[in-house]
Length: 162
Image (cartoon, rainbow, N blue to C red; front, side, top):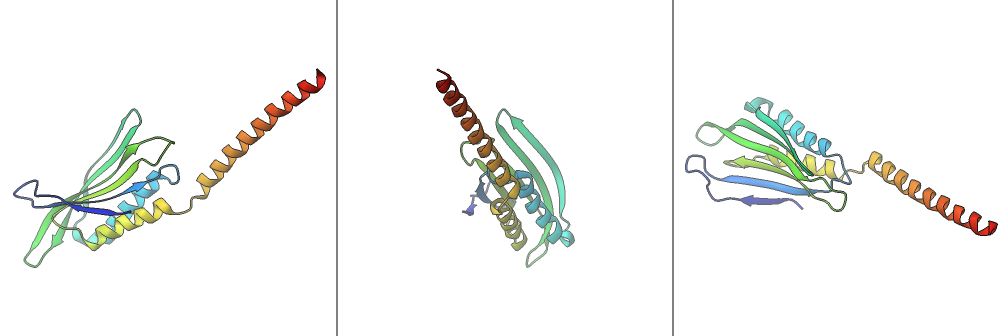
């Protein structure tokens, strides 16, 4: 589910800030591909808008992981061209128990069609069937079944000897 939350002005000079976010099941997709899909869409569709990356940072503390990218772009409104900032972030707790990551796009000013396209590209990537993950899960399941069969077989052999 994609949520869009307008916030109250956080600074009198810069106006409103908007967040678009959705949950990601890190057990079912490649987080790097999800982040890459959003960033690629932003870069490709905003080539002529002066889009450039200000900084990028990766954070890891115990099981909490975050990749944060801040960018700047020119946006044309009815009157003039103005520079706005945004942030693309993927963050969460790295666990296999439950889905726990979010992709967040924050924008100052207003959200453009390209911004929503970037979030949709990430959403599609997060929900795309991933053959590698399916095969890995099947391999782990097969390995567990084989180890259970092996353990049962040893018990049955020992029972027959007694």
